[in-house]
Length: 145
Image (cartoon, rainbow, N blue to C red; front, side, top):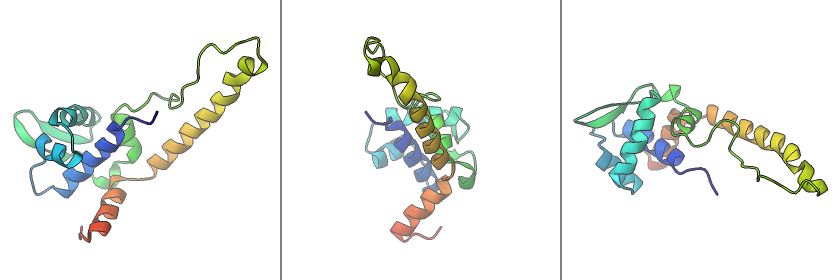
């Protein structure tokens, strides 16, 4: 199982809002780029708004970033869309057989490894901003920002 696609869609939405800042970023427009239903976009936009990453106004089409690109990290997006709970990226199976030496010890052995892995991943996400993503896409598309 992989991390919820809400994370990638959240990044997609925010980058597209920035790159379309002279246009209207309606849920229909965003959904067309993501290739999904506008309802999905509105749900994720609600999460992004609640986290203070976007500004949207009911009854008015469009959205804009609530912060500068350089102030929004991928970790902010990751947390905004409720991908996983703290220290819960990896699930550990419940009720292994306590009569087995592996079953008795597996959870205590792998849990710290899983926690360290999640912390390392989050550190990487914390060091990448939306500005980095926009610059990379702009470079690939030969767009001057």
